[in-house]
Length: 389
Image 1: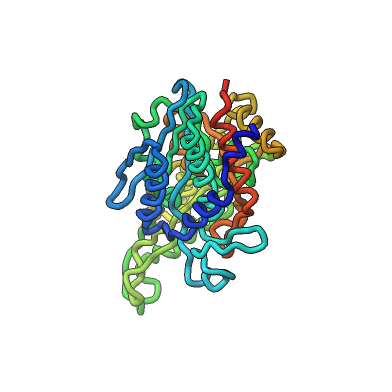
Image 2 (image 1 turned 90 degrees about the vertical axis):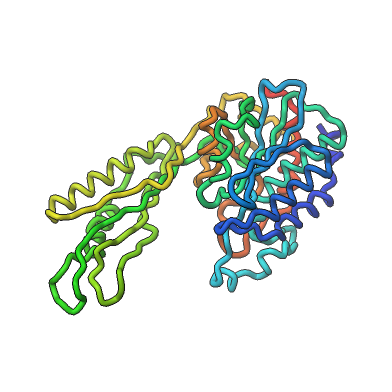
């Protein structure tokens, strides 16, 4: 394997990665276009075949492929091109410009450095090295670079049932895991809840039905309801929270509508339907206490958990790759939701493994240990050129 690793130019890899971090592909509101063009140029310059999948105006996925000796066990390496915004308050806590890709003490700092341009660029560069050196992998290698992962996952949803990936069997999600093997992924679902009241003039005490107060009744029940029966050390914890609230016509009017968002993070095996069954129970409880209580909800998204057996050929392949870079093998659960929760609907077998630490993402001074970028590229290359069966 060393002769293949010697083909990797770490300096070039770091330059390509640094330039990617400097692109502010912030989402929302969906400013991935320059990053899409950057990825396109890398593929085009290195004669790697690819297609664009339009999702919205100026927003598109990129699906690239290196043909192998067979397409029976094609492997997708996927990463998203968008990064979360940097708020004004967060900006004050950064030690460097978040889009400067500043290097200090062996780390590169920048928004998206861990989440997840390091993983995406590592996979792309591994493919570039294969193409440049005319190395034919045993199976087709497919790159899927998506938009909108940080929001509604419109990018991965646009690829459901796509012929571009219909022959793929395995899915490697290059999200930050500190190079641990995440063979389990937690689920997530959220909904907007609508509580109705009755308007009245704010000066009239006791008149009207204040939708805020009615919503608080339901919110308190949500706050005091847990999902301990679904939680375990092996499969992670399930919990839900109210994360946003909005109400009011104007300050002088008793509000007749209050909307709040409930976000649930689910342990492996906890079905999303069970969350909303529980919410309906709580709504009925409030109705028994307040006769004219009126609440409804709209499910915004459902992202299912998944589990890939440690004995699966994909996990075996990852372990071989880690052995080739002298990295220990550790199994873990990925706490966040990823494009895997969407793409597994194509009957793909997933694993999440990539450079970076999830604990430093979506916050000030996000960074990546540069040595781990180099290791990830070698890991992916090893997986690309090793037969999976």
